[in-house]
Length: 169
Image (cartoon, rainbow, N blue to C red; front, side, top):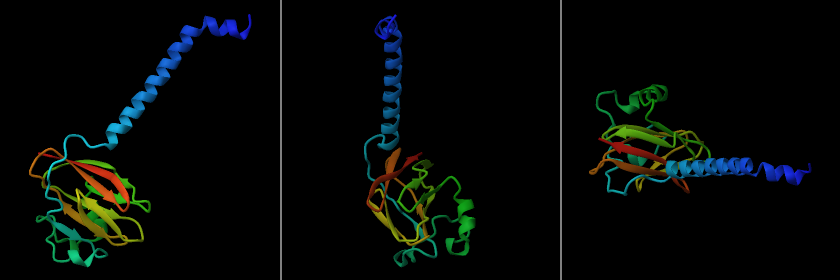
């Protein structure tokens, strides 16, 4: 029996394997597409409504109110304390402006920490409103929207849709 006869006998098996692989690739592409693009229509938001900045951040934000009222003002907390306080609500931007994590879900009125882990200033745009993060600086942003749920887009530098935050009731 030669190779061609063997392939003809196993053509149903080959077709099934090919179909399975094609479905896996399609499922992966669909997953990646929906994990990057926003869900639902764009809506008007009021972000950032309150902005508190770290010691190495833009001086234009120095008169802003702290994002949280229950804790001590941001200026008196160390960076390590803020990292603990904002655990699960901190987005870090690396040297290539990649966000980690790239997706968060939070309730309206929640403050998040935008954390620049690079030695150069960054402009992070939160739903169309820019915030300057100085080298190794951070900003505390309170997120609110008139319409919920709402997907907030974050851009870092030249990167568009670097991260998303789903704002819920």
